Structures are given as structure tokens and as C-alpha cells.
Image (cartoon, rainbow over all chains, first blue to last red; front, top):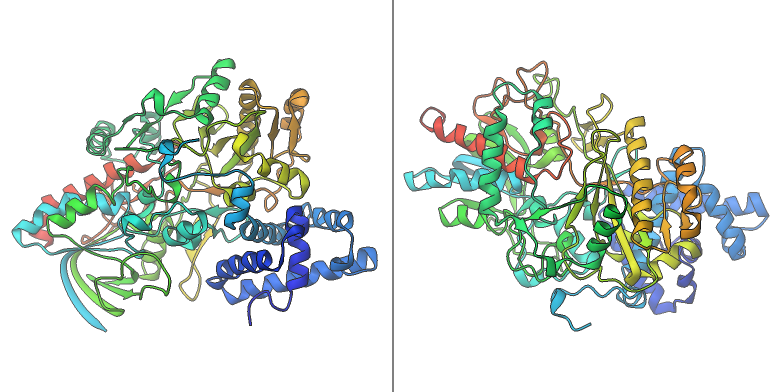
Length: 132
Length: 501
């Protein structure tokens, strides 16, 4: 059992809100993204892994309390609004929790070789020696 | 538990440990046995690929994302052969006289520290990069600063054969940076010093070290340790702790020294930093060329911030920007058109900010942003935005603003934002890589942990030689100062070798 296995749909919904291009990913793209996130979480304390799952469930239920539907069933605008609430929340711990989650989303998305290529980042060990 | 014995054991192989190892290595010819214990791995040259996530995992503690206890800042420090010198950009500044005067450490002569720093500058080939190798990311910073009449300065750097990969912070793939992994450690090893990698020091007892050698993880980078996996007790006549500003105080605490040394772990500073990003309307050379060639320090005294050029990688850049969604993506998709500036706050020692260990011996860094640090970061961000626009940027990402995207036509809003910034810890991405203090030098156990030569108060055989010695923030990139202080520690040990060994 992996860290994300019980919260995969919520995680994917959050990632697609944080990085809208993620909604275009196919199953292989998602698998690659999630493998990077799982690898990053592997060495983190079990308590942190539990907090991540708990935070994702909290986001799912926040959708129910605010809009009458779980986060995964909301449209993109409502998802965005809800995540902005967390990002700017008056409680520092909640802001930190969201910061951690968005960091994982960026890690998974921009850690992929394909995403790096799409944004035009092409650093090369040969530096100035690469014809551009 | 396997038992080993040396005359001198050095814990850590970064700017401090590498220097001490080199400077003590002539003693090996007289039969003195010296070992360096390094927690991280030693990578083969071909393993430096420049790929962001895999290199961060291989070379940094916690992949460069060591979180403070408050979870509002990440600390980046190396965990490899060469320590943080394997992952810095090679910027090499002499210690500022005004700072050393302010430190006011008895017997720490400013001229002596400067002279030693110059020695290592020469040894590490420190020079100004020639003009033809400066990329547009750096040139635009100079242009913007000059347009605003700021006194921009060029960084001296310790490079030899730089090919401009821009990958310094992921370990130079061309071995051009003259860190301790390239200069001091190989020299020490050729003189007879033994370097044991993947060796984590757990605690120090009376002239003895308890350590654990880890196996190379499956699929991981680097050579296996030269020692068998397992637990070791290593006896030594002299122990020099050079594990950095987080791990050195934590190690001494785990060794039960906090009772004797009330200042242990206190005085932690780190130059908290924000990465600023701006978009130009054309592609610029940014991910080719040395990333950090210029800086601006004229506001260090008045407004408590420094600006440096920088160029980061896709994940770090995405993480550094505030917010998410379409606006965020727009900047990321313009990567080839991005200019970057690093804003560093000149933080001061404060009572809350310190290294501690918990009941299980785990290390924790407590850090809260003081009003002065927040002001410094805000002023530095606003100044950076002005520099970007003066250099021709079309839009700036300003993390301290409620709505971070500032178009060129709105640049007059900058001063208003400075009056009412949106600085919420936990929302902003703040990171630090200049970790200092925790085992400060001073006059006695009431105000410090060591004397001016790095000797721990009351323990003649135990020394510290790294940035944890700094009594307060250095306000510049610290590595030449660390080497100078480590050189003083090594000289003291050499002079006293007959009585110590």
C-alpha cells in the first residue's frame, strides 16, 4: 500500500487545480507524477504521511461543507476558490499544510522530463557548448 | 560493534572539515592517523547528471527540503563528499570587516581571518568570470541596477574550466567548482587521510565516537562506503566537529553537552531567502552560463537585505513562486524568458531561533521570522521588482503581494505593496542555504560554546570548525570565512599536537 493509494482521486483533483495542465495527463503521465511524489514521501516520517492523507480528506469534506459536494465533484473555479481559502487561511498550520501539498504537486508535475521539455527548460551539462 | 582507533577524527567534509583535513594531513607523514567521517556518499564524476530531483536526493539532506519546526521555511545543506561545497555556486567573498568587528570575539584578529581567507581564495582559483561567459540573466541584473544607480558588484568565483552548465546547485557535472571535494579532500587523501563516506556520527563520548555506516541504497548514487555496514566505536585523541550549523550543535547535544554548554544550539541564523522571477518578452540566456555572477549589498546595513543573481530549476522555481493555477503556469511556461533574483534577509541572532533535539535525539530547527527579517524580505522583493522593470521585464512575480503578478504598466503599485505587503508565513516559499551559528565562538561558557580557536569550552580535545562557530550572521556567502576559521582550528591542533596526541 502506498501513501497516496487511499486518496488518489482527491490528490489528482488537487494537482489538476494547482497545475491546470495536469488535467491533460494520461494514465502513464499520472503514474509517473505519482511515483515521484511517492519517492519523495518514502523517507518522510509516517506521521507526516498520515497528515498528508488527513489533509486531503479535509479538502474533500471542505467541498461538502462549502458547496454541498466533495472537492473531487466540484468544477475548476470552485476547486480553485477553495484552495485559495486554504492558502490564505488565518491559521498558520493550515497554510503550511497547503504549502506542503502544493509543493508535492509541483514536484510531481515539474519533476517529469516531459514537463521540463514542454516549458522550454533545456539546461545541459555541456553548457555553452550546446548549439542553440 | 566494531572498534577502530585514530589520533584525529574529523566529522564532516565540507568547507570546514575539508579544510581541517588538508591542513592536518602533513601530520600523516609523522605517523599520525587521521580520519574524516562523512554522512553522505561520494559520487563518481559521471553520476553528476544535472537532473533536478535525482541530484537533489543524492547530494542534499532531505533532498534540500529540510523543514523548520514551524514548517515555514526549508533549509538546504549538502550531505555528500565535500558537504555543501559540492552544491554551492562557488561565490567566494572575503569576510566583511564590519561584521567581524561586530562579532567582537576576543583573540579573533580581523587581519588574521582575512589573510587566511585570501590564502584559500588563491588555492581555489577564485577570480572574476570573464565577460564573454556572463549570461543575459546576469547582464540584465547589472543593467537594471545601473539604470537605478545601484552599486552592483561582481562575485569572485572559484571555478576552473567552467562550461556554463548552470547546474552548480545540483553538483557541477564538469567538476569545475573548486570545492573541498575537488581540492582539499583529494589532497588530504593523497597525504594519508582516510575519508569514510556513508558514516553517520551518532554521538561523541570521552575521546570516542559512536557511528553507523549505512549501506548504499538500492538504485542510489555514489560509491559504497570503504567500511562494512554496521555500528562502530572509534577512539580518537582529538575530535573536530564540522557537520554544519544544524548537525554540529545537534551532535553535541546528543552527546550530552547541553548541560555544560547553555548556549549550544542558540544563535542560529540563515539569511532567509525568496526567489524572485520576472518575464521578458524574448528568450534570454538563463539556463546556460554561471548562474550567480553579480550581487548588490548596498542595502545590507540600511534595509537588511542582499540581492544576488540566481537561476533555479523547474521544480524549485515552481515551488518558489507564490500561488498556483493559471497565473503560476503562465510564468512556468515562459521559462526561457525568465530572469531571476535571490533576495536574502540579513537576519540577527534572536532568542527563539535555535537548533534543538527531541527526546529521541532527532534534530529540529526552530525559526520565526522577526519583523526586521520580514521587512528586509519585502524591501528586497520590491527593489528586485524595480530592477526587473528597469531591465525591461514585461511582468514580475512578486510573492509578497496579494496578487503576485505585476504588469509593467502597474509598476507604480510597487511602493503601495511595500506599505501593505501580504507576508504570511506558511504561504510564502522561503528557503535558506547560509546556515550559521549554534556553536558560537566567544569568551566563555556563559556567552558561547567554543573559544576563538574552535575549542569547546572545558573540553581540550574537542573542537568545532564550521559555520556553526559564527556568533551572528555573516551577511555574505560564508564559505571562505568558514575555511579561514577552520584553518585557525587546524593550526591550533598542529601547534599542540605533542600534548594533544
